[in-house]
Length: 105
Image (cartoon, rainbow, N blue to C red; front, side):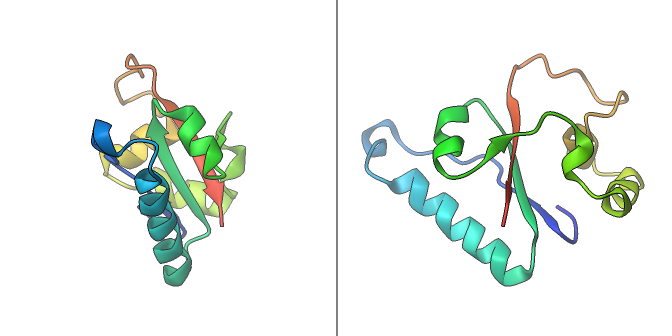
């Protein structure tokens, strides 16, 4: 997503695969890849809060988890996903009810 923040998007497992560790393996592989790239944090917008908590993510309450330099850089982005991550007023409200979560690695 940015130099030190990555996003997990559109992660899914077939109903028959649920509970078999497939989702955990996918997240673990993505987090490991983020580590290899030198990313400091991984975030997601999700309805599966309990699943991501089990992977070590926590709910983001506000933008205090982002250092001010990175926040200012992100503000300059034209990417709508970045605007949604920052919860900027110019993006549509979160009417879906998904939760913003983050993992520091």
